[in-house]
Image (cartoon, rainbow, N blue to C red; front, side):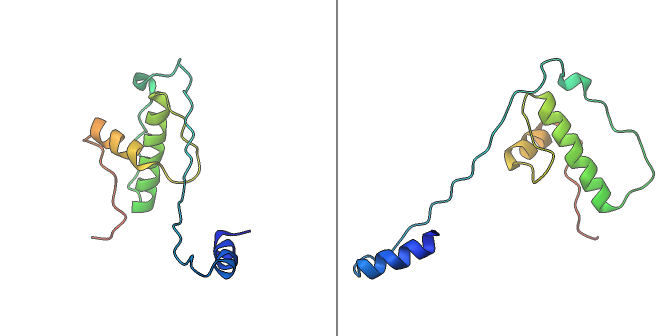
Length: 104
């Protein structure tokens, strides 16, 4: 039963109960990566021809995932990167800021 349905049923049984607080919990799971991999062993991406903004952003996300693995964290290949990992990467690599998808 969804929380909205429960709230309606509960209010029907208890007319004085009219306010409810929704609490959302997001679970993250991190695993140590292979200890044989270190930050020094992350290969740089080979230079390529000029790219589209989307390709540049995708390449940046791949670099951040490789870096996170090298730092000892497991980051899934799908979905969005946690903001704290992106912030830590940009702090450690100020020369590699996140590319913008906005047109100039």
